[in-house]
Amino acid sequence: MKTKIFKQHIIYRKVNLVFGILGLTVLVLLTVFTSCSTDETQTVARFTELAMADEFDVEGAPNPAIWGYNIGDGSDTPAGSGWGNGELQYYTNRTENVKVENGVLIISARKESFNGSSYTSARLLTKGKLEQTYGRFEARMRLPYGQGIWPAFWLLGDDSNGTEVWPQIGEIDIMEYVGDEPTRMFGTVHGPLYSGGESISKAYELNNDRFDTGFHIFGIEWGPDYINYYVDDVLYNQITPDDVPGEWVFNRGPFYIIINLAVGGSLPGPPNDETVFPQNLLVDYVRVYKRSNN
Image (cartoon, rainbow, N blue to C red):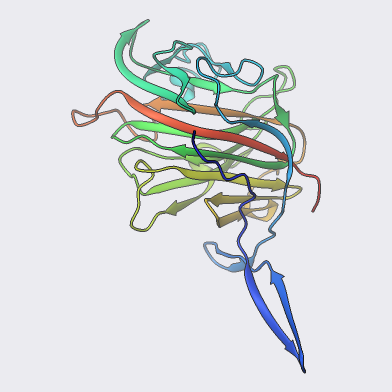
C-alpha cells in the first residue's frame, strides 16, 4: 500500500522578531516570483475544504462518477482536426489506453493503427460531473518521455450549452510538458486576445531531476483575479488580470478538469525513430479543494 501525504503545499519562512525580552515567532508568507519585468509579492491562499479526491485505489476503469472520455481523433471538433492542435492519436476508453492499476491511473500512448490513426491514447474529463469555480486543483503525476509526447493536466471553462466557444470560455493549463524536455514544464492561461501562440505562460525547470523519473505535484490555487501555480511546494508564478491583454474570463463560471496524453501536434511535433512506445502518464491522485477562505 502506497503512503500518501494528505496536506496543503505552501511556501513559508519563519521570521523571528524580538521585542525587548519577548521572543515572538511569526509565520510569514513571503513567496516572491519573477515576471518578465518586475518582482512582486504573491498572494498565497490556503484551501483546505476537500471537494473531490480520486486516489485511484480501485482497480479497473476510472471512477465513472468522476471521469468521462473524449473519444476520437478530434476531426469533428469546431477547431478542426487533431483537437485543434494537429495531434496524431485516436483517443479511446479501452483498457489498453486507460486503466487503474496498483494504485495509479495509467494513461498509455501506443503506436498502432486504429480507426485511421497511427497512435492511440486517452483523454479524461470531469465535464458534467465535477465543475467548480475557484479552489485548489492538484494532481501527483509521473510524466512520460520522448519526442512528440505531450501530456497535460488542465481546466476548461463551461461552454454554456454550446453558446460560447474557446478561447472565450477560458483555459487554465496547470501542467503541460513536451517529452523531449524532461526537466521543464509550464503553466498557461488562454482567453480572448491571449490564446494559442499569444497565451500567457511561464515555465518551471527542475534542478538535477527529471519529471519522467519520479512523481511530482502539479497544482493551482485560483481565486478572484489571481491564479497561483505550484510544482511540489514551490509557488513559481501568479497570473492576474493585469497580466493579460484581453478580458479576464476566470471569474465568470465553473471549469472542469481534463487529463490527456497527446501524441504529436503543433507544440511537440511528431514522434521520431527514437521515441519508444508505449509511453505512460501515471497519476497517483487528483484532489480538488473548495475556496472556503481568503
